[in-house]
Image (cartoon, rainbow, N blue to C red; front, side, top):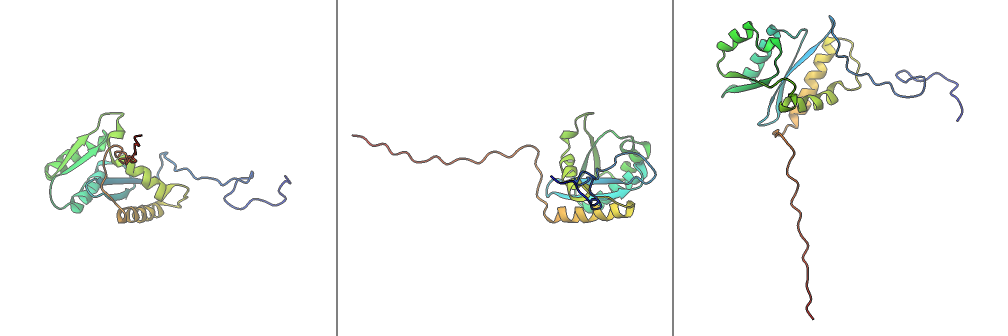
Length: 175
């Protein structure tokens, strides 16, 4: 193999491999949080981006959930983050009796069907991308949510049953 005599293209490492931009989950002033709620009956998602992960933004997200689901009770399956059970959130929930919280046990995120949707969302909106600011992340979130909602299907927990195999006919010949 002959060594390269020219510089690699932008976005490629000196060894000739594509550089993958992993999502940065660190803290900082330019951080953008994405809130999401999955309606498992039809597979539709409501998302919202926010500059912070506090009670005020969480209550705005709950308001979006309530507007997206105008009738019936709303059960929000959530983790034990402090903004989900803060005094201001509990006070807000008293004025909105249709919304009820169900907290999952610590370390059991697999019980929440929303986690499976996040995996699909990250692959559709965030994987391999590099954003210059929160506005681009919000745009990518809106676009990916709209695309995923266009092909939404009901969600079920667990693996579907395997298809039933048809047995072949066996002919027995008697002599």
